[in-house]
Image (cartoon, rainbow, N blue to C red; front, top):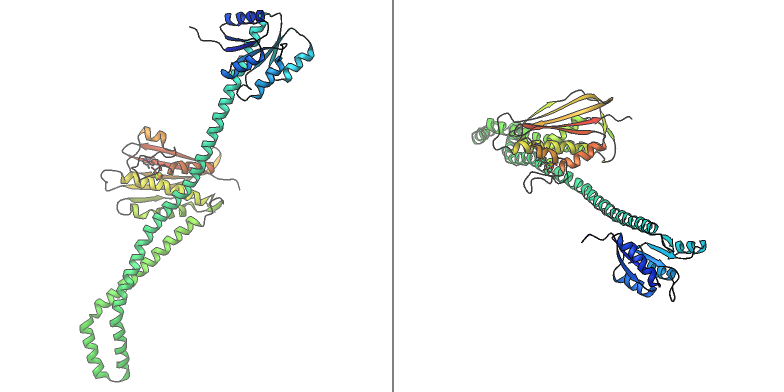
Length: 421
Ligand SMILES: Nc1ncnc2c1ncn2[C@@H]1O[C@H](COP(=O)(O)OP(=O)(O)OP(=O)(O)O)[C@@H](O)[C@H]1O
Ligand SMILES: [Mg+2]
């Protein structure tokens, strides 16, 4: 059985007309249902909506215009194209037919070729219209999904940045604060004999030299002043080290956060890179050398807060790539270099972050920048770092280039064109 070209409902109160139309249409491969009056036609259309209706105008009880009106009022059948059929050739009638929602008009006696041409045209139009509607809906849905995903991404961006930052800061501050508190506790103990010593000095100066000298000798025997001095000096310098280090971290943090997200500012990109490296310090300190090759860069106009996130992400990935190696070589290294370069007639700041990590397969390279793509184990990575970084660098009209060999390491190059001020 060949497939029907379409399902057509033919409505006419004259059986001869019905038969004629039926045979013209069936011969062309249409499935035809016939209705002898308006009521039956509406019933048939509700039962099983046809693809098109051919509707006689002059019928007793309910004329074609009334039938059409009912079909158009029912959302289920409103979209079905209606072609009116009549012997009348009055212009007024034709106009009325279009007003009632008809798409076309054929006159009796039928010209089979004309009837078929009109039917085909309107079926095709209806098909195209419904396909358009379907695609429109799909587009609207896609847009909605996209908007939702974007909102989520922006939110995740903030959370990811915040998470990285707080984790880094907590780790980094912990170490110097331990230094300070251990030193201060030690100092508390060493201060007690020094306090005694000061009293003795007072006594000595007060005149009772003989007795005071004896007590001083006893104090020396009990407190080993050379060790005591050494210990005190060490504790004080440790406390100072811790305090300075904590101050450094806080300063880096300020570089990170003074930076209003949306505002463009002129900043020293090397300071940004250093701040990011400092915040990641606890993840690479023992086993990875940081090689800085900073070129001559002027202050750069950018959104520093967001750019810092890019540097954090790229440096974090570099550390991860080295840490993912089954065994560490003695010379694991992250090279951070910067230079000024002319590209496409614009002056660009180029920042390269190269690592000696595990590198990437072609497969990984292909998906690198997709949101939620990660090869890290659960809890290890969300897969947003590069997607977010890509967006940020694109907002700076720049690009991120990647070179990598599996097992040998990777290089990420951030190219930032200079903005016209
Ligand atoms: N320097 C690199 N060396 C090797 N592979 C890398 C490197 N940088 C990124 N990749 C690969 O790209 C994937 C995606 O990186 P991305 O930074 O977007 O997400 P992630 O690091 O897995 O998670 P997140 O950054 O959200 O914590 C990584 O899982 C890793 O497979
Ligand atoms: Mg990452």
